[in-house]
Image (cartoon, rainbow, N blue to C red; front, side, top):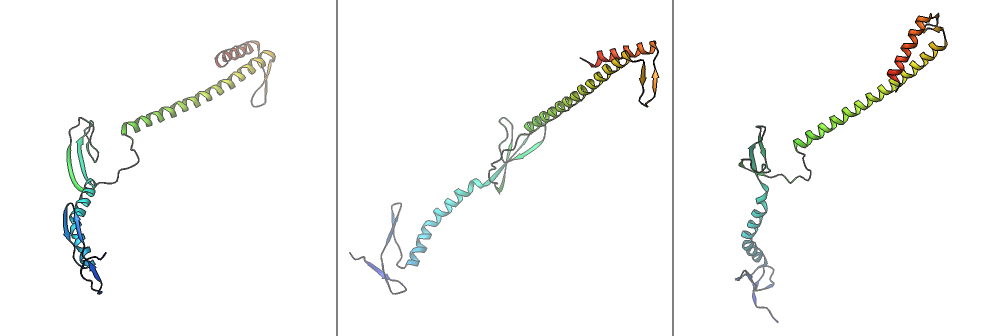
Length: 187
């Protein structure tokens, strides 16, 4: 089947006649391939601009302005909490891409800080309690040792290496002090 010939191309080739139908409107395309391409671009240009406009519309930012409960003026691209009066400001600037990370609220950060401080204080108190237990244990052992020494021996070697003899009153007083220390430091 032979196509009707509309003319010749610049290279001397025969070009068939083609018509374009778009949304029920039929148009005859020009004869040369270059003219046909230009005509097709002209026909599609309004639709291309509309598509680009609709695609770019969400990129333009709207900024919200409101006053929070502490009296601070807040500017944000996110809407304020429900019930808070606000103003919209059209900046005409492109909106940044949506962040995939979530920023914790200040109250959440404050709560985590409080919990961390409480945990650190508890750990510090636990450490001090352990130190006190160890000190009590050492004091208990020293008091029991002193009671044994004062009960059995009348002569005592002092820290400087000299030996002294305790009279009965002094020895009785040292034994009572050791017993009191045992009551205080030994459970």
